[in-house]
Structure formats: C-alpha cells, structure tokens
Length: 470
Length: 109
Image (cartoon, rainbow over all chains, first blue to last red; front, side, top):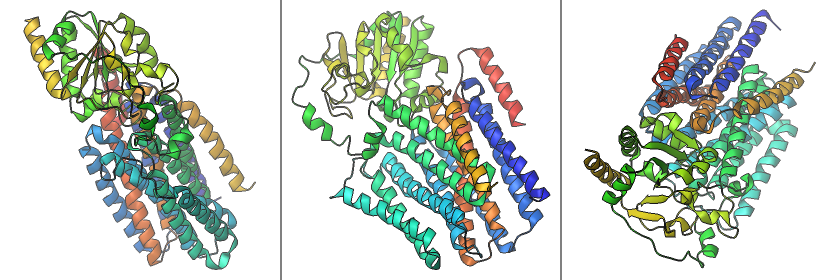
C-alpha cells in the first residue's frame, strides 16, 4: 500500500465513523439535526479525499475529470433545487427519487468496472460488481415506479400482469443466468453484463407494479436497503472502506425500518412484498357482515362545545388530514384549546402518513412541539381518561374490528380511540378505508360523525370555539 | 490476507453496528432517518471519482457523467432535505429548543 493509499484508508475510516456517529445522534430530536450535519461532514471529507487521491496518483484522461466535475455540479444543483422545493407531504416521493438515482449511480459504477476496465476483470470484481449491477438496477426501476405511484403518475392500484409469476421467474432466472455467465464466460463479458442489467431492470418493474400504493412506504424502505447493499457491493468491487461501511449502514437501516413498518401493519414483510393487497381483493370476503347500527352526525358548533368544556382531548390525525392540507388548522385548534387550559396530545399511529414517521414531520411543519406527538403504545392507555378523541382523516387504524379475528384488519395494532368518553370523526365521505371494510368505530354509541372537508370543518370548529371562549 | 476477506468482515460488522444504532431511533424521527440514511448511500460518488481516474473511453465518460449527476443529486439533495425536516422539529420547552439550536449552529461551522 502506498503512502497516499494508507492516508486515504484512514480518512475513509474517519468518514465511516462520522456516519455511525451521525446516525447515533438521530436518537433524539434535540441532537438529530447536528447528527445529520456530522454525517454530511463525513461525506465531504470522503469526497475531498477521493479527489486528492485522484490528483495525487494521476489520471489517464483529463476529459474524464472534466466530465466528472460537470456531472457533480449539475447533480448538486438538481439535488438542492428539488430538496428546497419539495412539499413535506411529497417527502416519500422525493426519498424514492433519491433512492432511484442512488441505485442508478451504484449500478453505473459497477457496470463501468466490468465494461471499461483494460485488463480482464478478476472473478472477485465480476461477482461483486455483478451483484452491484443487479441490486442497483432493481432499485433504479423499482424506486422510479414507487415514486410514480406515490405521486399519482402511475396508478396506485396493484397492477398484476396475467401470469405474473411466470414473468417474475423469467426476469429472476434471466438475471441469475446472465450473472453466472458473466462470471464464467470471459469472451462475452459486455453482452452478459448488459443482459444482467436489462433483466434486473425488468424485475424492478415487475416487483413494484403489483404492490398497492399504500404499501409503498415498506417498498421504499426495502429498496433503500437494496441501494445500501448495492453501494456496499460496489465498495467490495473497488475495495473502498467508506463505500462498504456506509452501504452496510444504509442496508441495516432499510431492513430495520421495513420490518418495523410491516409489524405496524400486522402483515409479514414477505406478504407486503408479494403484492396484490389493497385493490379490493380484501374487501370481497369481508363485506358480507357489516357492523350494525347507525352513524350519528354532528355539527361543528356541537364539536366546539365538547372541546371547550373538555379537560383532556386527543387528536388522531391520519393522512386524510395532510391530503386536505389541514395540518396547520388542526395545530391552530390545538393551540387555541391549550391556551384555554385543555390538555392536548396527538396520537400517532406508526403507519400514519405515507412513510414511517411521516405524520410527525407534517405536524412538526405545522409547529406542533414533538413532545405532544405520542406513539401508539404510550397513548393507548390515555384514551380512557380523555373526554374527546378527535379523529381527522384516519380510518383503518382506529377500527375496533382489529381486536377480533376474521376481518381484513384483524390483529393490526390500532389506536384505542373507542375507549374515549366521546369520539368525533371528521371524514370526507362515507367511503371505506384502505382495507376495504366498514369501520365499526363509526357505529359506536359514543361516536359522532362530522362529514366534510377536514380544513373547512376544522375552521368552522375554530370559529365557534373562539366565540365560546370570549 | 486476501483484501476481499477483510472487506467482507468490515461489511458484516458495519451491518451489525447499523442494526444496533438504527434500533435506538424513535419513531418520531423515522422519516428524517430514512432520508438521512438515503443520503449516506450517495457515498457511491467516492466510487465514481475513483473510477474516473482510469477512464479514457467514450463509454467510460458517459458512465462517469451519469453516475456523477445521479450520485451527487442523491447526496446533496438528501442532506439538504433532511436538514430542512429536522429544522422543523421543535420542543415546547423554550430552553431546550434554544439549546439544540445553538448546538446545531456550532456543528455547522
């Protein structure tokens, strides 16, 4: 190892340490921002070191360096512009897009290693780079479709081809066979590398199209893990410690989050990834025995009276709140009631929103202090002491049917909203939730329904609360 | 020892550290965590810089250009958007929020 290589190794190790430290700091909202910056410093150090080695050890062609620098500048501008412009509700799409480009970059580095090296690539390089190509390509096409589904460009419904399994198997077998031939047959390396890429890209499409839009958070998380692994594979191919460690960290993060998400939805991870859920398939069996009773409708004025005279109110926000752009309105109502002496907390279900923790970000944007956002396990015992639970745009996660077996939501962890003294549900229409079944909560004796747009209704409630207080 | 063996060891150990560290992150921060982890895999840009040293064909230039654009977009966009999100997380206790703010500014310098 030359001197510069040794220095570089330790600098990359330093940046890997900074990544671990940065992620560690994410364990509290107080230190998280610093953690992210520490991690960014690690990244800058690694990139600067890469450039130092580039110039210290020399390069074959200056055109390559010019092209590289132009690419970096363009990429940085594109990254900053998209990061600054994105709305918080659209965050899952952006993460998915960044995942797409990251996977693409990892695949390109690995492909470049195979296709343009002047000496015949060693078996080690072929295996690791080949894996990098496969995983990177699956992530690239898969994340692109996931982003499209979240954005609504690609229909969110599960799209299953006729004989989907056959197509899946063709893509998987094709990728495996061309990967093996890539390693074995040294006379047609280029051909096999390209075929591996094409089959892997097709598999990415086949993988994500059949999965319903509401399962996209899990898909993004899994694909995030894939990108991490692809980067680590590229790292193994070029023997770089920073790529290996960073890739492994991201892989671990992705897997951990996917498992947590799948648990919160009470579905095995593999069943989510098998797809087909959430397009009415589940509704067919569950529709025959709807809950008995009638829904009671209420008015904004009546809700305001209940809220003002309550001691403890729990808000239960769902993604419907964000779709109605009513986060700030809900936060205003919370602030108003808090100043009047009512105890306010927000119950956050793990799958509220479109990615893990998404609702927390949306409410943080509306200036709700994070101490008031309470997790499922901590808030559930509190419902029985709450005078009012106000459900806005959440459905399946409040359905008491989940407590008994035999329904589409059975076993799913739910918020015990029905334990509150009074329940008010603000809902756009009488439609069913994502699971395709009626919500029994709506037929309970202590539940009142307020049908309408969340923002309009919340504004009406605020107006009459103000009248009552003054 | 074979460098690949060392590399695989590193990979496995880093994986375990990852699981350990990520498991301690509260659900509140899962979205910024995912987007932060997402920007970390933009480290692939280091790989792009290193392979650029050996590239002298048109095909190689195309690969490097595309990989550089995609990788940098991943890294820069990821960190900027994570910072934007974390900036919004505020405490109801004024002292605590002020504390975290000054710390944040200190780290930025």
